Length: 101
Image (cartoon, rainbow, N blue to C red; front, side, top):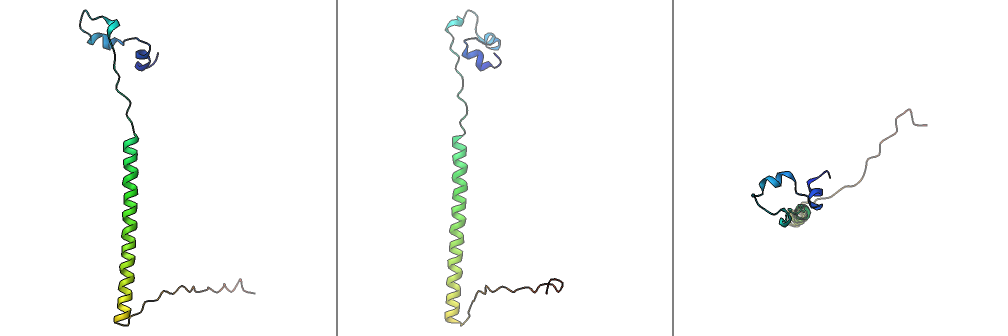
């Protein structure tokens, strides 16, 4: 028996517990209660909820900023004649002279 838990499961009382018993105590009538092992489910679930909530808040903020920017651009283009265009054309690079044939 290596661990105190093994001793307790086998019905043996460790020596340090013997010293804490008052004199004249019947050892056969002693019940040793162990503390339950810690459960990590609560902290893990709490962490997942906090992370998920943060991601949702950031997505909502991004969508609100996008909607506000789109409405500002549409209002400015309708009232002031300001236009906003996105150009997705890419500039092609010419091959170096050594690679041209």
